[in-house]
Image 1 (tube, rainbow, N blue to C red):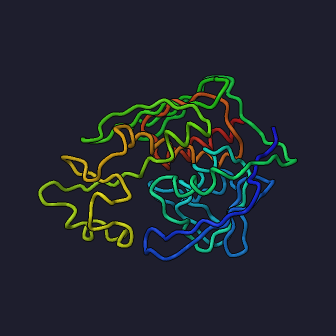
Image 2: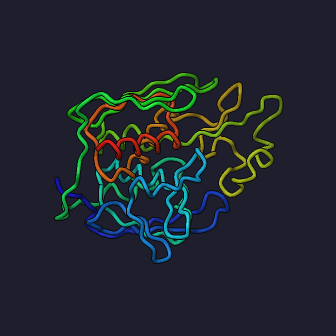
Length: 279
């Protein structure tokens, strides 16, 4: 199998999450894998490209002396659409904000993919593997003739325990995963949380609106959802979205069945590094 890239270049515009400044990325055909470029420095994705100082709720890439943040939803869209070789040039150290993958899938999904002349490696799981993390997290990987995932999360009420089964394809990603939004908890229940959102979430002044129904995140407190869900399984679907994006750092596809329990970005990085060492 040869690496697949996009047939033409496009520009995706948006705003940064933390300050709401205009930013954009240019997506270009490429034949060496998935790479991010900022200020003339290019970084090919690999397990070594993870920024190890990143907090657990996002994934960032160390590009030279700069840290390019909020990459996980873009990378998830790329992998979900079947792209495994593309160059992303960003105008700022923050990828355009999207609480899910739709900003990127809507821009990329109708572009034809073309084969490069570079062979694309694939990991074929031939035995059962188990990777354990903190607080009961684990990943069990078993042989399969496709890339499939069974994922379980366990959040406080009102999300609770949710499980989801997924088989990777462009069609499945667009219909089941791309829409699922990030999760934002208001850890208060004695006052109206939305009227005080600027106090509790000062880092998001540009993207959290006064109308809670227009919040780009799945927002909830200890008693109820503040923003309506797209569907009841949207929280677990988003954790799946994140995992697919973090798996892009392997630099190769995986043929196997993943059984994930309570994954997060920090644990996802561990899974990628273990697979890289073993294969």
